[in-house]
Image (cartoon, rainbow, N blue to C red):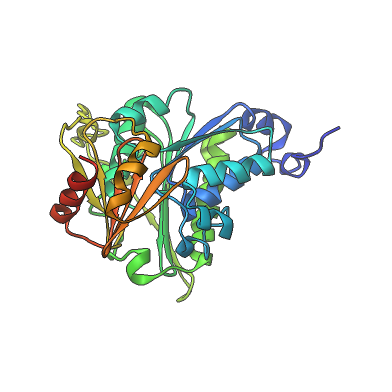
Length: 338
């Protein structure tokens, strides 16, 4: 008899019945960096039915200090994070279905990915995506768990549609200092604590123990030994456009423009075409060889041209390293990609 989950079943709030429920549930994890890697591993070990992983980036050497699924070999090969994560998670628990999507999740992709999803885990690094997740969760009535960390600081909050305020209600209530991992650094204990809070709440939702869900925002600083819980019940807004009496879901409105974004304090601009396109990386490699040093793997192509490094994905999305200037990044994109 396989006793893989026996210790989890001995925990009375889960038990055999709870474990049976976990085995039927699907989780969407948006972001496969530090928080996403930690949550994906914990839920894979817990035995969920299916994990859908979405991330737009590849494994870099700076990730290895805290992003626990990845290895030096992944960084050498510049594997997309979700690909490297899937490889490792399949080794951890072959019973769990892992779906890996190399993409910057936009509105259309999100509405396709949530089919059959029971829970959304936030492991992103920006509020634009979080607000998209929030509207998506409210519209389709899917629980989701917000989480973030920087330095030694972390924060987590569980949002149940129809029960309490949503993220849009709380935007002026959430403690934030504007720092990022790339400006203030980060230590792994902060990551692990946020992951612990998020995955504990996830297990409560997956076994349908809603009475045990924490109704407060929790914040902490592992270095200064601070820990605070903030009640949010009164922050609910009747006229909130995301969860109020007449929701319009403003962050699900589709745009048609080329989108640019500076990534999390880095000297990197992401460029995303208005519409997904299919790029033949082999042909693109030949085309770009006269312009600089080119490296290619099955998932992405890297061009080093002067002080700039351009990483192109098969869906036409590109990361332009070496600048925070979106106009300059667009110019480089059009010069090399068209």
